[in-house]
Length: 203
Image (cartoon, rainbow, N blue to C red; front, side, top):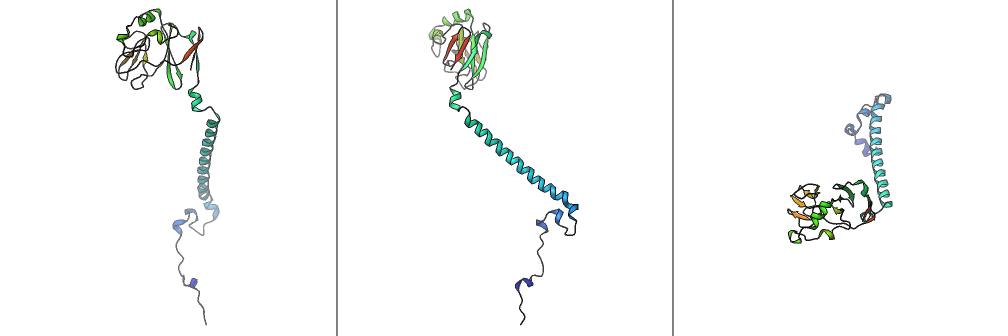
């Protein structure tokens, strides 16, 4: 009795050409002739893997360094030291403090007298000049407009020695007080102290 197995009924092998590399489609081709094409594919995969591994390693190292470094809270509480000797009278220095611009102005005697003579009734946010400065010669304030957070321009606007915000037209005087425009409040005064006549510490 003759026995037939199911596999002998398969008379046609499926065509797998669509799944093969072009370099291996011809079973009679010598491997040396297709070596370059096969290596290009291998090298491409290896290069892509190297790029991904490098990117992952860079991210891991950056994360580790940030973890070992000071926290954002620590940086926010940091203080800076400013050399006042480098600021001529009537000029304004801008430095970065807690990711904000800080205005340090060396005021003239004329500016001091003028700002101290301003009646409180003329001010929207009523503050005396004496209450905004520790040393009359120096105005230290945060250079962020109290309207929408733009950075005012020093020595500009309708008030001599003051600041002007070009975004919506707020004018501040040489004491950093709002005098005209939409801003509701005076420029903010940060905590600061003088170590000596030429050294200012903010924060």
